[in-house]
Length: 160
Image (cartoon, rainbow, N blue to C red; front, side, top):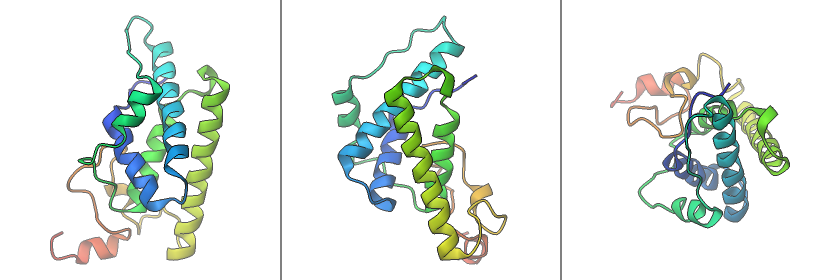
């Protein structure tokens, strides 16, 4: 059962972050995010059939992703945690084939980030030595989230 809707503003942060941290063309990212958005909406509708939920057209959704005021995430850890949030906001049983393909692409990106993080830092991204626990499960980042990937670096920052 999916109990949360993800706002388009959240997808904007995610889009800008995928452009920053992941090597994939912007058009492909927009298409994937649109399908994931509709998958989240469809999953939520099944859990809450009494609610009316408006859905953006593909063009309107993609135009909203270009909002220059939504900054990308500071770290790969924030990106990873937001991708997990999006994944948990989709119920596989209630989505279409194109949405499943987008979800599969999302799973590949998550795996790729895990692999790259391990290669760079020599530890799992969810390790207690990373800032994973200090990042929120959401697509819109909090202002006080860490700007580095490792807890030791976060504690040692003068502004922390």
